[in-house]
Amino acid sequence: MRITILIVLSLALTLSGCGKAQTTNHPVQHSNGHEAGSSAEEIQAIFQAPQAKAKEETTVTIQIQDSSGKPINDFDLNHEKKMHLIAVSKDLSYYKHLHPEYKGKGLFTVSAQFPSGGDYRLFADFLPSGKEKTVKSYTLTVQGDPASPVAIEPENAWTKTVDGNEVTLEIDHLMAGMELNLTYTFQDAASKTPIKDLQPYLGAVGHVVILDANADQYLHVHPTDEKSSGPEAKFMTTFPKSGVYKIWGEFQRNGKVFTVPFVVKVP
Image (cartoon, one colour):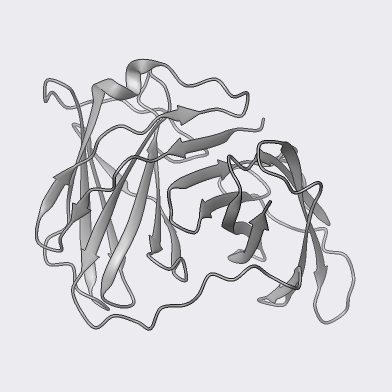
């Protein structure tokens, strides 16, 4: 089953390394273009990340509660996890897909280590039982020396090699506002033989996360055929508007998850 989520973000909330913040709700659209119900507006997320410092373990806690402050206790599994947390640096050069542990009474925790000081955007994706899928985002400021910014430039080549896997991305009729196909093709980088032994990762052949250059538009895309094992993995999505986007494809082979990034310019 294919699910695409588009979050149109309002103003980002900033979370300092020793503070806490409560997010506002972001509208969620499914791939059929219909917005999710209003249940997400009734949900609050309070984040804490004391003393977040570069290159040190930082514990991030996320408290999920209703509008009256009562903890939300029950969550459904969403691709084998109760919460997915995507963390990216401001320039999108750093990407991490995390899975916070549920402690009960609406509390999730996760340990993360950030490579340098600066702002990181985090997207928490979860599904309260009996309610709509909910996504909350916030900005975490990490103390420490910042890294030199990396320009987000559209790709000229559409084949990359990661961990011995040669991956080619093909996008048909690239245009904003139109449903399109993302097709990944895999072959062994050494032997050039098609890869047919991709392993399920979080219940599917792969996952794709897409952000625009400002991290204002967020899409989480699942494959059209979740049981595929290669040499192709296909996804369908719609870019909401023109601009530059970064695409991360996550796959697993030989027990190791590998991530393939591409940058595209959508006319």
